Length: 138
Image (cartoon, rainbow, N blue to C red; front, top):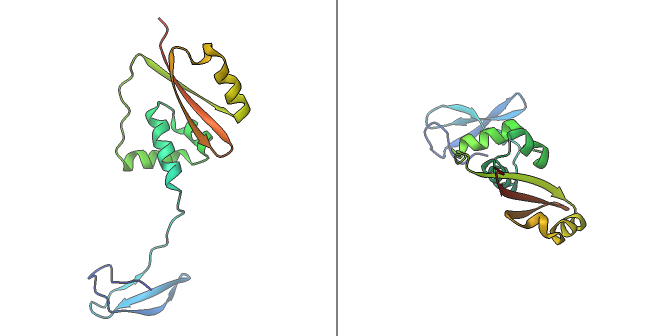
């Protein structure tokens, strides 16, 4: 049962029938009828944070969707909600790859793969994603 009326915020609320399979309530103070809003699907904050990080790294909505398994429309709404803007394009270019642990170890053992670039490695379930920055080759 809701704690208070959404219109007048008073606590004097009673049940008042069912409409479209949802409980209806009546505020005894202002005679306002209302139903409690259904909670949408809750997504773990981990995915929100990862999506925002990937967006700032230059990945498109659809690339992020393929990596995280979250709709590109949802990702777009998160970016609007948190008012994020990408930094202007610089002389750096980011790329990403997803590895299994053994593949990541093999990749990191070769010096030419890591020389002259910045790396971030983040865990995604049983895999690892590496984001790499390189200067544009002139």
